[in-house]
Image (cartoon, rainbow, N blue to C red):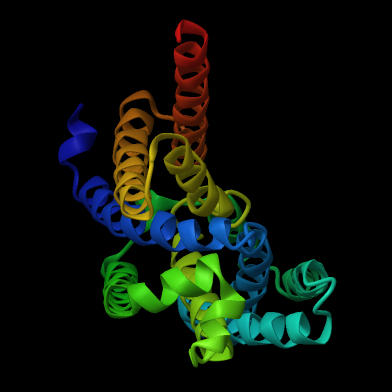
Amino acid sequence: MEILTSEFFQKALLGGLFIGITAPLVGLFLVLRRLSMIGDTLSHVAIAGVALGFLTGVYPLVAGIVFSIAASFAIEKLRKAYKTYAELSLAIIMSGGIALASILFTLGKSYSMNVNSYLFGSIYTLNSADLWIIGGVTGAVLIVIGTQVKELFLLTFDEEAAAVSGLPVRFYNVMISVLTALIISVSIKIVGALLVSALLTIPAACSLIIARSFKQSVIAVVVIGEFALLFGLIIAGVWNLAPGGTIVLLLIFILLLLLASRRGLRLFN
């Protein structure tokens, strides 16, 4: 239990606290808009940015953010080009991100030991610079969502009505993509690029089971996200487990528990 009082573990908890708010919150909008796979797409692009950061000496987290934001603009551009097959934009960008990352990884040898920390997460290695970046992204996301929640609500549930009412739909679509890119970029060091989409989608899936309104969904998704991240970290720390995998499995357990409870209530009634 000494690990719970360690400085590195306290930093991990603080980083988890930040991500536990923003990732599920933005993920709720993505799930409701049927854009769940954007998390996987941008996470693979972010890894390419991280790889380039190692090669060029740029801070990897910053390089990942730049790549993810650029990819978010590209996704929106392709979505407009393929209106009937919008999911093609995600497949194209994801393929490009994986291909670029694989090439960049083969160009460098000295940083190969660091690859796993970004693929599977390494929350215990968060430093003060990481926390400042994560905290800044968290603050920016909360400010944007807090001031634009009505517009985002309308866009999420009826994009055509939003356009008719004069809402700049394209601007808000890009804004959501950029917010997603920021969150994914700072989350890959916590749960890893291969698992980061779980933070966006599973809390949202849980909230859709128990919530009866959009407001309840927002509250539920944040509560579930925070619970899974903080308790997942504690469980992983005490039993020496992989933090990212523990957090995701805890989220899946919560989802299965909620599904079983709903089924049980239906049978009882």
